[in-house]
Amino acid sequence: MRKFHYSWVILAVTFIAIIVAGIIRSSSGIFLDPFESEFGWGRPTISFAFAVCLFLYGFSGPFMAAFVEVFGLKRMMLFSMVILSVGLGLTFVMTTEWQLILIWGIMLGIGSGLFLTVLSTQVANRWFVKRRGLAVGILTAATATGQLILLPVLANFVENYSWRSAILLIFVLSVLMLLVIGIFMKSWPRDIGLAPYGQEAMQVEEAQTSQTRNPFKMAISSLLEGIRVKEFWLLAGSFFICGLSTSGLIGTHFISYCISFGIPLVTAAAMLSFMGVFDLIGTTISGWLSDRYDNRWLLFWYYTLRGISLLFLPFALAEGSYTWLVIFSIFYGLDWIATVPPTIGLTRQKFGIEKSAMMYGWITASHQVGAGVAAYTGGIVFNVFGSYMWAFLLAGGFCLLASLFVILLKKHNPKELV
Image 1 (cartoon, one colour):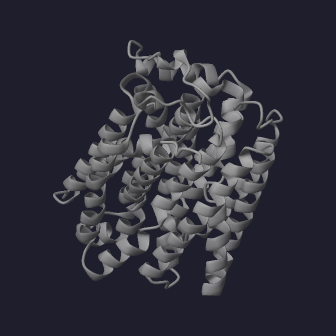
Image 2 (image 1 turned 120 degrees about the vertical axis):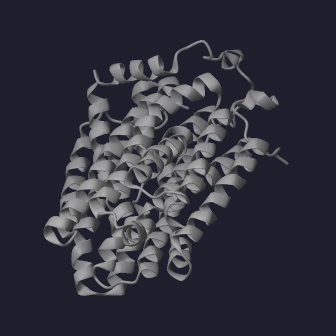
């Protein structure tokens, strides 16, 4: 009988940690209306705070990757989860707009940066040689699943009790996650005398560390290297549109868009949660496919199908049919962040395994710029037109443009790096 490898325990701990961080960050969609009602803050102001969060968690990614190299994976996971826990705790005493921006923009943005950007790449690169694409797919699925799966529960708490009770729930989850990381997480296979999964023996060079290097210099150097390469711009540009069309628009404004058509809060949140279930399936399959097929064509079809679904959504809501809304949730959910495993695969092919985490961190930063743009401008579009329709139609058009970006990349051979 084959011996069970501890890499799967690491995968499970990381999966749960990403889910917790994801639900903390994405719960902003649940609290937009309650914050507006209780504090009297305008929707553009609240959307701005959430946009800052999206922006910062994206731009913190490459720096988090560098800090992991210097201070260790486990230590940085603990540090990030502490920031999330403290931010949630401070929400209970929040009273002014600047506090909203500090807590829900800066603290939760930085705290979620490691978990929702480069952590899946770091864990897959360190702990897996075989099944690396599958590992990335599973962990990437956790990113969106965590952002969506508990939304109906939080919506029920908000509707039946108060928004504070919903904050308390995710605060307790963050504290419990701190304990799990502290007990089970390890930074490297060598820490427990193992080689990565699929590697026959430990390699001596793996024991080398980067503790004497400057993490900020490491991150900036990787950016300067990336901007000189065409593939970096194509991947960053397509990922900008990915962020614009997912967490920025759907994650922030989908619930409010549904409410504007008379759909109850809990039902709208359930649709997002439904997307999360199918994202888990779709992104895991995408990881499996990225180990076997040209990642460019995977991305081409993912962006094309997402664009079509976003163009379809305003008409589905106008019809007032729950059936069409469920169909959209399934179709869109399968494609929510299925783009991540092939994007990481293409990044790894171009820049190598050692540089891929920081390079992907910068590409993810572009993703979050797109998310921040959509989160903020979505509120502006609603104020100007009284509807989100144009925001969703434009996002669908941009996705079709992204499908053309990725075809310009060099042909990808998934067997090239193991």
